[in-house]
Amino acid sequence: MRSYFWLERIGMGVRVEQQARRDRMVMAAATELFWAQGYAATTIPEIAEKAGVAVGTVAKVGSKDELFLRAWEERSTEISLHLLSQAGATSESVTERVWSYLSLMLEATILMSDTIRDYLVAYLRAGDHAANLQRIDQVVGAIRALFPPDDRGEDSPAQLAALTLWLAYSSFVFSLAANSCDKDDARRLLRAVIEATCAPFEEKP
Image (cartoon, rainbow, N blue to C red):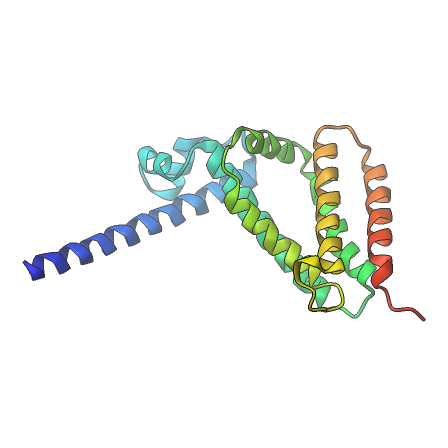
């Protein structure tokens, strides 16, 4: 009886690992296809074929909206953290470090406005954003690291500044996707927000 119990546990572990491997294969295929050809042109059968799994297996991982959101959010977070790491490695002012990151993100938003629009529609249709909120916390924390260090935790002025900057950038994402903001105005206004937010943290001569 005891041997049977352990065999069951081993078998369960193997099944969990197999499912995790299939999930990774599906997400890798979905991410590649969504980023290469966009939301509308990508189908579940296409993802299944690229991942080498059945359509039903893809459906178990998530709906088209869920796969698109996860693919977009995971890749965007990866890119953000990479750019923020590069910005933090420079000796420029706080303002220029933040601008070097957010200006690139803004330009990507302008270039990919159609895909951003698809993302926002899928985002509004989705009901669970817990995983993305954790990713946003990571990014905001990395923006916070561009500011001078302190030990004031969540009440830190730098933490509030980092969150303000992320929210400002996010508002431009929505505005550009909705065609309610001119791209040159977005560049100019984002720069002004960054300068005003970062000014208190710059070293005084």
